[in-house]
Length: 104
Ligand SMILES: [Zn+2]
Image 1 (cartoon, protein in one colour):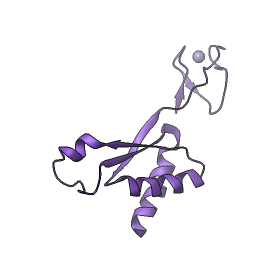
Image 2 (image 1 turned 45 degrees about the horizontal axis):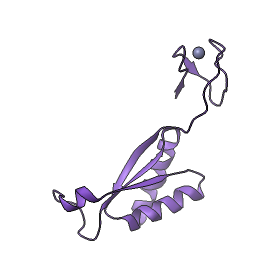
Image 3 (image 1 turned 60 degrees about the vertical axis):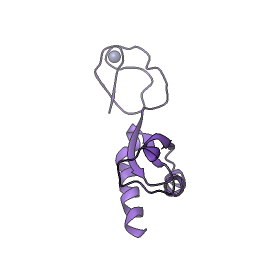
């Protein structure tokens, strides 16, 4: 869901100009949101590959700190890796991810 940064009304998808206040919508990269944390970069890379095949850009952030000071549940192999996807692709990504995790 996008909102006009000027008048804060709801925007139809893909518009470059707000139909309410007629001002331009700045084009910027969508906000990235975390969808899932995985125990290790290897899993994260697998997920990234699958998501990118579906045309979903994603970013992996590894959290070395949580591995070093982890409070359990984190694999000793590596840091915890969190997958970030654009907010507007979140549901789709989560669905793909759940399907994947079912098969691992
Ligand atoms: Zn507006």
